[in-house]
Image (cartoon, rainbow, N blue to C red):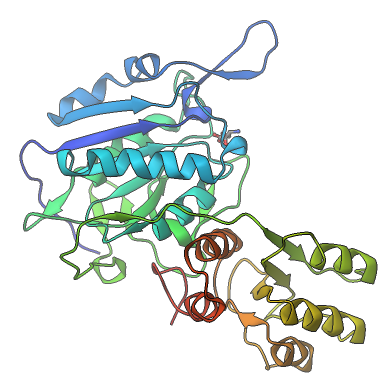
Length: 348
Ligand code: ASP
């Protein structure tokens, strides 16, 4: 990992969508509720010390990330697009619960991205004494502004949390209690913040395209996530696979992509594939990769026509599937794109 130099007067846009970072405790009910963005910024006077131009836009009302959906992803992407030429980087303040889904979705939507889009948030609200929000926000702003030879150091959609910068579509929220809420099990860190911010240049993607930023904003939500478990019943699998309008399924299987060798299971899967439903296999294990055909228990899935999702996270797989189904009418194109990396979400 290497350090980098700073340039003068960068401009960063903060996009506040909602989440714990911007909440306070309601004294009557005791539950957390959102406050407006100016109140958040009052808690971080340190931001002014950067000497950057820092502007903000806020979603009104703010959205708890459990309520985030493709419409919100489109709003975030359009905000970036509308402001793209005026800023060096973007910091998206977002609830942690579905942050990995949003970062994955945005990584597919923003084609030819040449500027940093850094998602961050916090486990404790910004107004509380031990908040993790301050460091998360301050370092995210620094990363969003960092340049080398006049180019953004990290021109990717990322998540910054608890001193670590991750590729967004490789992350999973794994901890609901401690500040180190995110992990990227199958891809190295893009940077780590200590006394300095140390960038892992070899892991960062630098695009070669000279094309303008293009936002792909169509999603098809006719998808399902089917987690296999010992004792799974035929009627349950059948009811999922015969859902009206269903076009794609992420199958979460055991270990290296294995499922029970029940004849009815491969029959149901074959029937679904015959109807034009796309099935992709990812592992329930947080780390490692699907290797279809390694065991007999995944050979049946392979023979039925299930696609290997290799080392993709569940969040990347489901958002990629919704996004591809929204983009392409041709099933072969969807299948090919599922197998290959669109935005660094899968090892080729
Ligand atoms: N419920 C909150 C959200 O995801 C939790 C958080 O921000 O950490 O919006």
